[in-house]
Amino acid sequence: MSSLNTLCTRALLALACLLGMAPAGAANNDPVVLVHGFLGFGPDTYPGNGFLYWGGYRNIAARMQVYKGPHAVYTAGVGAISSNWDRAAELYAQIKGGCVDYGATHVARYGYPGQARQPTGKCWAADPNNNPHGYPLAFYPQWDAAHPVHLVGHSQGGTTIRALVQLLEYGSPDGDEGGGDLYRGGKRGWVKSVVTISAPHNGTTLRDAVLYVLPNLRSPLRDILDNRLAHWELAPDGAREFNRWAQTSPSVYWFSVGTLATVAGTWCCNGSDRVLAPVQSSQFQYPRDDMIPYFKLFAGETIAGTLGQPGMGSYTQSALGRVRIDSSWFASDGVVNTVSMRAPAGHPVRDYDGHAVKGSWNYLGTYEGYDHFDILNWPNTGPSADPVYDRICDIIFGL
Image 1 (cartoon, rainbow, N blue to C red):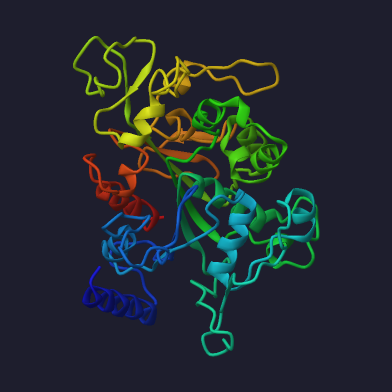
Image 2: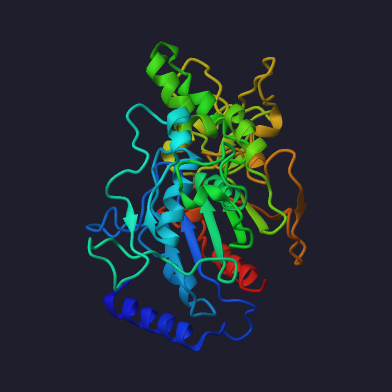
């Protein structure tokens, strides 16, 4: 966005805050915080080329700010490969202010080797007039039950938000974590709504199907990293554990969005990449021709370049004690199985009918033709995601 547009947007946001009112037709004008997914990045990570996680060479946050606005929309930057818990701790500090605290008991029990409980360089100032260290300013220091926020997460950003809501309301399951305010719980009502987009609520088979193609890469260190960083929670078995802890709070409006960029196999003319998969079976799923090329390698019946290694479009497993993966998991957006995006298994869910219900997932439907990054407007031949975010704005500001 140009500097002139940036100045105009900031002026509009300042005016909205001074007036203390929602735009005409809106029921609320609570701030929005966007949370990126696994291997994602914040808005200042690549300042040289202008590429944004939320929008590619466009800017989804800026669009949401002025859509029937003005609205306050912030873009967070959390750990690219961190666990949901650690990312939630970073998100809390960025919104409220203060220094990141991962929790004493949590770090001792689950932290990666050498992890600091309170890392340097991860602080945000709540008061611009009392900021001797020059920390970046917190998004919304007044955040509390009287000043709630809307949280929107893509991919692992969605499960990160779920961890944050759980910690806000119930605190750490291990009790005191060394005094960190987040872990005391009791913060019900701080989050008005949650929207998850292409989120792996029940994990993704990309992790199982791809990471185990070369079993000789297994090692004790990899086992530690898989279990203590995000990789484990992204797997169906790890997601099942996470879902037992991170509940669907009755005080929050929950929404989910699904994406789909594969098609069932046919003998011809189904819009799939026929160069990659010239011979197809109707039992399996294959990547659309307009899917981002790299993910086509893993999304189909087999992983390209392997000797018949099942891809996401045909991967199954039924080992005792593990999450059963059957044909309902074959459809995906190239990264996350579409069936996993609807809601955490065993949690309440309904199809959104224009009326939102608290304490239940309100599924906004499956956006066909959108791969995992089309929904972020990354450069590709896929459809524009602008209508998706316009719809999200209409819903959350109407609550």
